[in-house]
Image (cartoon, rainbow, N blue to C red; front, side, top):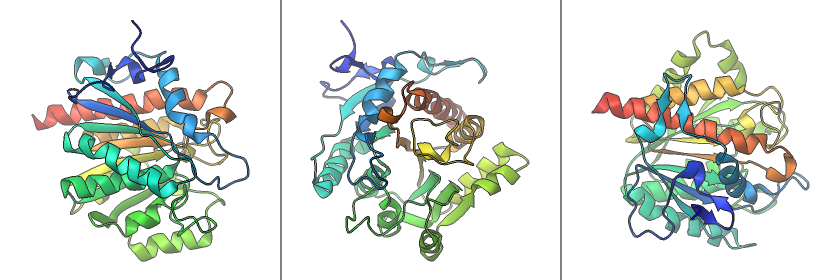
Length: 315
């Protein structure tokens, strides 16, 4: 019998199917937030198909990374897939509330969470639920080409370009521990940098990353800022932090990170301790070969490999 999450779509990386389970009995819990609200650029749409395609593409992969000391994640961590958050078309507020409610028991479990968007707006309700459920103070490493901190998009406050404006005003989020990392390009607006600065958030641009002589140490420095005066650190990755040469199924942003740079940094973040992560803004309709969806498996495995190293250090 196939281990499918729905239809012909397998569980992510052949993980345990938890959709019918009454217990969250795996070390890592995977879920999808297949939400898309307003499209902020023409007809560039279809991001709600991300979780489905990411899972489908993951069927090609094992959990073994020979380049990371031959680690096989499955020897160290068990993975479970709880399926997708239901969303309501044309009701963004209700969809956000659905995300909050869905992840609440996941955060209560104390397990490591891996979420797939959907648009980047989903990160706000995920983290709002984390702070309200656990009472913990949260720092955020935000890997993105853009700040995503506008007040609204044409009057809609729950949009893909607004999550960090909400997070700046969320109890339990320490703004000084929000590290906007990899920011670049003219799709940012002048006011977005101003909003980040006024909120007390930290900006690290693509040029800062390129100027780093030791990428691993630079990642450790970023983590140090994110972890200051908080209980946990969360990682959120927008696909467009990568240059479009490495991200054909994402927004078209040049001068971005390479896949090597991203993987090196997120592995390092994992070794220092994360409570969870999300990966958002994969657009299957714009990527005939699904390269971007395929890459998500590798990115998650690098974070989990780092998480294994962290757990081994803290035993």
